[in-house]
Length: 235
Image: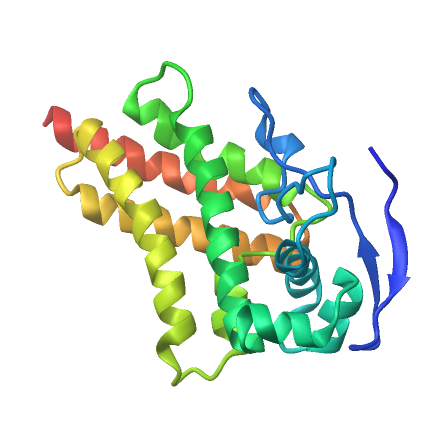
């Protein structure tokens, strides 16, 4: 792997790192892939400007925040022109939305893929949630959930970021609900929402404390929920 190259952006007044761009390989584990890192770009040819901009914005927005990173910083990191960014996206807000759409798809592919891979019972798949998240929390490039961060940074009366975040959560909750139903939960949607709250809480706690083991505490709570859920099935 290439070592990170340090570069100074024009704005904000922070030092950013051009970290190696990676993507999950077949058979990879959660600990070897950061789902919120920019997607791998073709090595055989210089990536197109649009992809470079999204990759650069992903790195900067995740680490420093959307508000803290200006367009000048993004184009400097992407080694392109400001006019190219506006031609491709029209505005910074549209760029933010493009990054979130890409980030959401990457995270769902990774997270849900980890839950659903291989042979396992639905209950066992649900019990994978927090060990998988713990691996993510332990990554040096873990900066929290981009959707939670984006909603927190934007005008709380502006529903656009909230709608994007909810669309992402809807896909995740649908899978959790299906697994809960297959495991015999009397209220699969309710169980999915309870697990979703534990997931969100663990992500925020891990971001604040930088302690990956908060996933273990959330997992213990989830085990109580799942035990109660299966007990209700037996009853």
